[in-house]
Image (cartoon, rainbow, N blue to C red; front, side):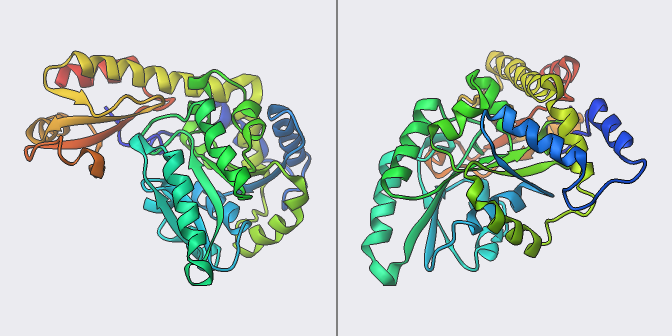
Length: 348
């Protein structure tokens, strides 16, 4: 009953096998091997255009380098208040961008409200040299609240980015989960709607350690190469990241793994909604659920072997959760089984 994080799940056997195959013999280093080039070409096919691909170790590195590439003096990056870049990255985006400020924007269930986003851009610009200047917008897909921006919602954010002449970044740590929820294509969820940079995550969806920063404007690639090297994110044996992505993308495995994780979340959500001792704090659209439980119920579930995290209550919900209740996050993964779900629901 492990629902703590999809980061707790191991590597899918096909991806592990690909790593083993890559371990023998010799190959050119620093992203120049045939396997590296194969995966870069494959990602261009996936996104239906030529893209520049930069393998990195973590999603935080991908996000931070993406935002650093948009740097401006006195820069502000606009993001949701509960976005991973703002709440969970220990100041890395600010550090890599040499001091850019994150400007939080509110909105329900992890999504930036477009009207509030516009007001924050205007507020920042209104301060002149004393207040700094907006330099980028970043959105998380799927969000940290487990919700998914619809294509229309991405359009609305992208329209503001275009009118404000700001680059738009997407944090896609759970990109595949959002993609299968919307039943769309990678191109339709990104550059066709105005996304300029993408953090493309595989680690949460069956890879061992595979993250990539994807640039849809390949003219920016040379500068990004220097940023990655300076940040100590250029792998010498990058073929091991390429090997993971090679297996991950082959035959649509990445989408199958995300569909499974999402379907397990749906099964879990349905059981919780039938329960008389728990309820969902809000509807979600990917593989994360946020559940309101009595604290004593949560403690009993954990004593019975369930593993999950208590979660900070968003300020928008602070009046709806009583003193004896808590908010808890449950995350499913490619490795979650129906038996895991049923065991938890029985305990609940």
